[in-house]
Length: 492
Ligand SMILES: *Cc1c(COP(=O)(O)O)cnc(C)c1O
Image (cartoon, protein in one colour):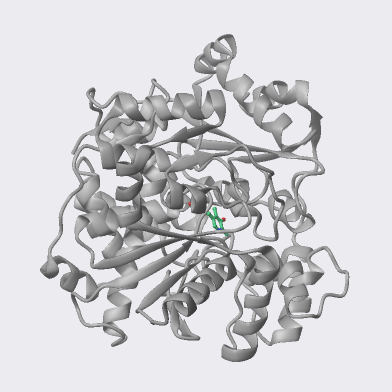
């Protein structure tokens, strides 16, 4: 299978090249030239497998250069003891829905589903393309991605990773998670500035040719673990198949019957993986795109106009506080197969902050997606209601999806079998969850984790509950002008 850029559409690259490059030279995103099709027998076979087996089957359809054995080894290393539930991505049934918990990995958020496996796909891709230098990942983070990338790359042979975060721009729990990071190939540095300063600094380092040449002489080259990399999207397709199989084996549906998925959405990566699964032939009914108050996607689905010129809301579901959902570009290309048109939309987005796809394409999007959003206080109310009525503890992101589904069901007066994608452990956003339960005492640090556990009797994930006791390894901070020097020291 070959991959093309959403802004060019003709030149093809292999999967490993797409994973190495991340973004296409023309600024577009890589998509598979054809979407592989599966049949009922394939799905039935998957239902008899564990999560690793399911992932190998799905990945194999997209990554033909990787041998079966290679994918099995990668899945084994990525989805094992590092997850605190042997099912890896278990389904829990509560309040008339199934919650697909994607947060049993080392950082307690769904980014682990992709970032535990992507570093291994990347290093295997580098070998396939004859690369012998050490890949050095640079990340600027506002919180979750940096920690998930650190855990994904930690001690992966042939890699180094350095994360920059804004000194006063992340929560105390997030800061501690990164400062206590383990691994021989990792480094974490705070930047005296905000997230934009950190991100601008990293971009400047990537653009510095002389620096790249110097690193090359030392046997290193720089790369990113960006969320638009195909190597981060493809592992996510697997959990839609896995959830479907678990719905069948739990007797919630018969094989072949349709299931809806309701997905808390930010960058459109998670839900797009569900769309690929549907296109491959998984019996998915509706894909419900759930947003918080930053509801640019809800409006887009309703009108066909994407407009980021609007107030930006800081909400209690910060990983969905996004006004440019990068992965939407992939959907637009797949629905139109017209790279010139997609390039036009993206140019309009960067110039005017807005584009209009027109009636026909808007209609095509609505055939595939249902949009909905919820206000911050309604999400919090949903957390309280799920806990009181079903004894289910949800985080603030999951609660957005759960609430959007509830509103939709009320409006339609019907209940269809639905999987709500649950993207973070409630303990990761303990302050907001405690507040939603009416019990917040004003604690801001790692004590929140213990407080929530004591109040609910639900056990916190180990990496979060032990946070206060772990040795701090990284305390350094630099001025934004000195970031390159810090990289140079790390890679000396
Ligand atoms: C990243 C993230 C999301 C949004 O996922 P996208 O792929 O960006 O749409 C939702 N919830 C949590 C907890 C996340 O970390």
